[in-house]
Image (cartoon, rainbow, N blue to C red; front, side):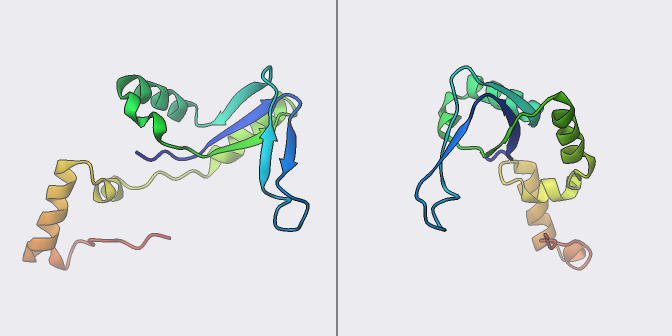
Length: 132
């Protein structure tokens, strides 16, 4: 199962510890977050809730990973602006692309097979549209 990244703000005294001091290592390291820090999900609230429900229904997915982008919280106004900026230009993929790329759905597989094997559809339906 794949989930897109969640964006969150941390309200607390965070500290970044680089893995080394050289040019390559100073951007990689550990983020130390105090246990009393508060997290605000700026983008991905519904995904977070869906993941929680999915974990409840299928604990085996607990080993999956998800990217989280953290920002240091500098107040409500900035958090609200971040939410507006992240969602302003979001574009949902077309339903046909979602079906085309869904390899868990038997109906989607049937549609792909019909398009690939039926001459009537061969030149009028794109099997694999370009993705940019």
